[in-house]
Length: 288
Image 1 (cartoon, rainbow, N blue to C red):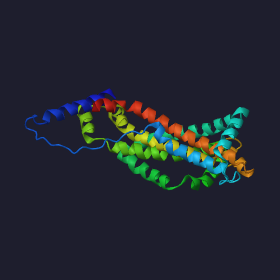
Image 2: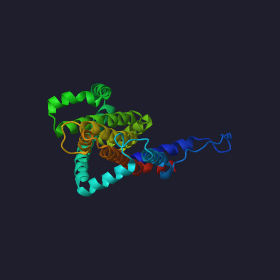
Image 3: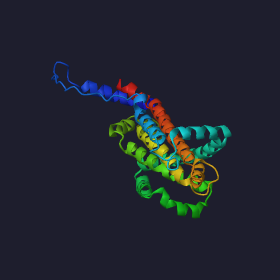
Image 4: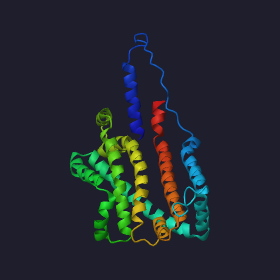
């Protein structure tokens, strides 16, 4: 990473040295532009909070029947009761285990495939087409084959989550690798970097922005796949809890499950964005 940053700083100094003197440059005024502002967390949550309040109001005045959809206040009370009894914690841990195990395996496989395809023509010819085919085939279509090959237990569920996760990781990381500035590659060759050093100092730092973009998509895909897979032959998990509640018409438990899935997805996305800011902080330092 240090060599990569030094190389970019050297290149920036060379470009500055080639610029004309200040008196020779023509003065051009650009029209003022609006800088993209960053919304405060309270502003971002305005829409969801307003929706929940409207939902609660509609339930209170009788516009929405409890048999059709439970009110948010009812779902909160039900969630607290499930949490106190320990039922919710057990099902949550089962779902989290499936989701994050599949996520970890999928991220590792997608990253390895992206590096092999982005750094080698042979790798791209043999890998990219297969991943694009998997991208076009939905996870639901693979469930029958996965059951025949892996059974109907946990292995099948984790494998399908991993296969869903690796696609956004591969595509975004591969795009970032192929988009690395050719001048950085030529500079690495001129200083005599070995292949391992090139991978460590140039390829991986250049692929990080695309990797984090893919990771944000992957955490959402992970929980989306889990919602479907937990409806198949499970005896624990948030999906199983919701499936059993559907049989008894308990819409409040279904709302609790949906809220947990939404919170886990948003929480995972915020965590990835936090790691992204930390990992890519060197780019802001170079720009300043």
